[in-house]
Structure formats: C-alpha cells, structure tokens
Image (cartoon, rainbow, N blue to C red; front, side, top):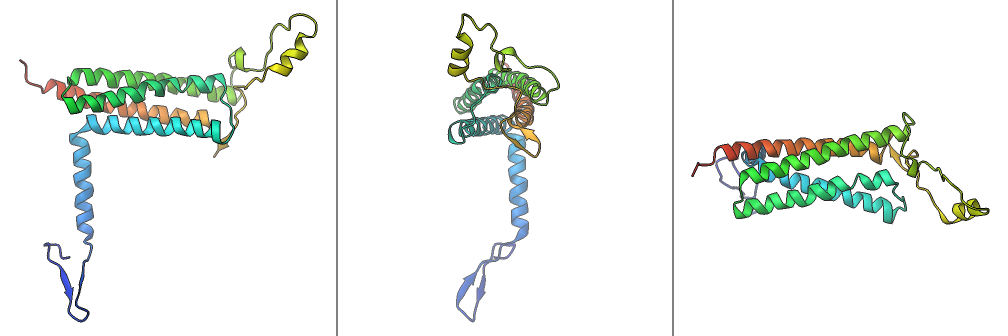
Length: 208
C-alpha cells in the first residue's frame, strides 16, 4: 500500500501485497497522544482504575497463590486502592452521563490525597524493613503481657505474628512496600493531571 492509499500488485504472482508505511504508524501515535491530551479526564480515570486493579490483584496473587501473608502495614496500604478504584470508575461513569466537571475534579483530588497518604505509608513501611526506624508494636514480634502461668506457651502456639520489619520478598533490592511507593506516587500524579483537566473543563463550561 502506497502512502497515497493505493495498493501495489505483484503481476508475477497475481497477489496483492500490502506494504506497511512507517509514516502511518507515526501518524497513529500522534493521533493517540493528541486524543489523550484532549481527553485527560477519561485517560486519567482509566489509568488509575487499571493500575489500581492490577496492583490489588498482584497483592492477592502474592498472598493467596504464593503464600506471602501480609503484615498489618501491608493491609493498611490497600485501603487507598479501595478508595481510588471506585472513584475512578465513578468518574468514567460520570463522563458517560454528563456529570459536573467540578464533581470529577473533587474525585480526582480525593484520589490524589489518598495515594499521597499511601506513598508516605509505604515509605514508612520500607524504612521499617530497612531498620531505619521502629515499626508499630502490633507487628514487631512483641507479645506484651503473658498473663498467668503457661500463658506464654499458649500464646506462642496460637499466635503467628507477621512482622512488618522483615521483607518477605524483594526484587532488585526493593520490597513490595518499596514498589508501592512508586506506584502510589505515580497514581497521585495521574490523579493530579486528571484534576487539572477537569478544572479546565469546568472553567470552560457555559455559565447558566
């Protein structure tokens, strides 16, 4: 196929041979980028939903498929995703029904706040794993008061403490909490971009 849209024929074999023009792929990429810039609300909401679902599914995979039980700090870091994913889905639904851009902007700001909080929590957890500071007592292996005689043996037998200061898995030197720092920070940045797009769209709406 020639740049003008014509098709080259092979007279010897009687077949039609289509030649892919690299310039066409370049134009498609430019069009895709332009569409993302022109629709930042939809792009940001979709990206947050996809990243959030992928992260939570990854956490479930490590827990249930690979057998890595989460510590209390690990479980707390999931709460922000439980907030961000439904809000992103609500933004996408709001786009389809013509909801107010102001409401969408507030939703993005809520997502950004939740993911920034999660970034700090994940960074704190990473520091606990690297022994830079102490973690919470409920996941540091401390049993506290043993109670009556024989209570220590019963407590050790019936209690399994998932420590927050021991990384169960690392890749390239980073634990799951370490990777969560970058994921949460990236999602917060995307939410900020979406909030900016919603704000611009809100300001451009006609005043009734």
